[in-house]
Length: 261
Image (tube, rainbow, N blue to C red; front, side, top):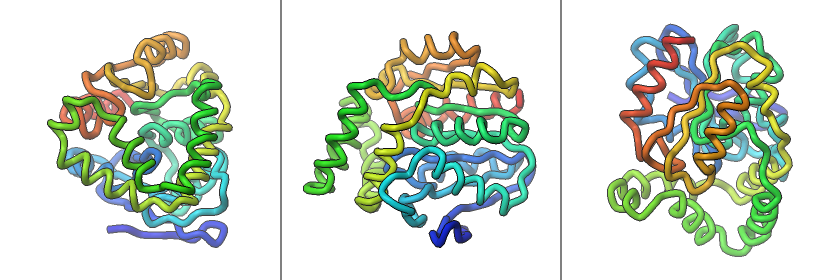
């Protein structure tokens, strides 16, 4: 059941289920808390699971046309303070991982573990920054086709056939994202800074889950990042959407990680 609070006159939507160690699940760009629906049941019997609709996604409102990682994090932190969470494990998918890193930077003593799921502590390359800038111009003219194309391109041809129903469901959720939410998040990702130090300088448990065929994050770069930041890394066979392409392996990996935390 979705609940909500008001943050800076914006509605923030979240869910809070189960009892035990608190695990905060943060979705990625053009997703919302429903991305965790097939994952949550494996954890709610032993853990308290919090899912959040980020600003400009799902049932949460926008605050402007730039949602920096700091602004996203303020909103998430408002929910966590509302729930009076003292310690928790963070799992962030893609954009969600960037926000987890900012949360950990601001509140390192509250973090029991941090999992970057198809995400990175590296900043965008110059090429990717240019792509995001162009996308924000193009999205205003042809939102549906842009979202459909960028979303489907996250999957290889084999995955598109094998997970056709799940991909279509996720795509329909992506298409519900307002244009303002798209632009604000994309700009926030474009201007975000390198966060390697968050992983290097803290002692909480760290895990990077990478996709061998990820078209967004090169697996070789992820392996180098893990070594550089002294983080554990698990490489799954699929691409950028491990919760769809490698669901069972992801659940197994997360359960092991949670025990270690």
